[in-house]
Image (cartoon, rainbow, N blue to C red; front, top):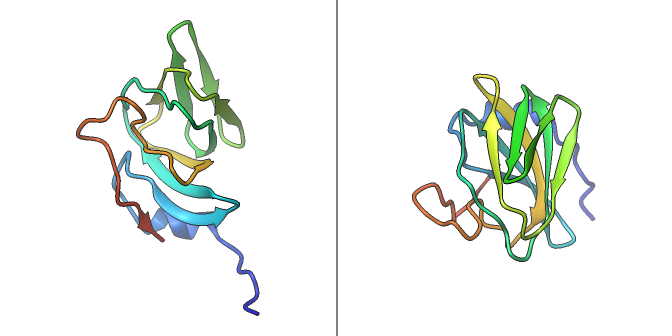
Length: 123
């Protein structure tokens, strides 16, 4: 049996510079653990079948909803339930996020478009 290895988040985030393009950094129980960098505003979208957990490791994330918004700082996370339309916004130049979500989750949800990433890079 191969022993499990420790994952150093800093190394994973140092391995890429593009924004809004999640990278798979781990897998468990049909879930992906992803690293993603945000800069500016993403797009309004929702996910019909998947909840998402956004854990902030650098910067401040503003999660907008149609009826309000929540700030998420370093060491905090927010869970967006399936079906809830949301718009992630980086309040700093760059925000680093660890995502926990089902492996089937597409980053743009039902919105689609040019920011959709279907072939996820694995780090």
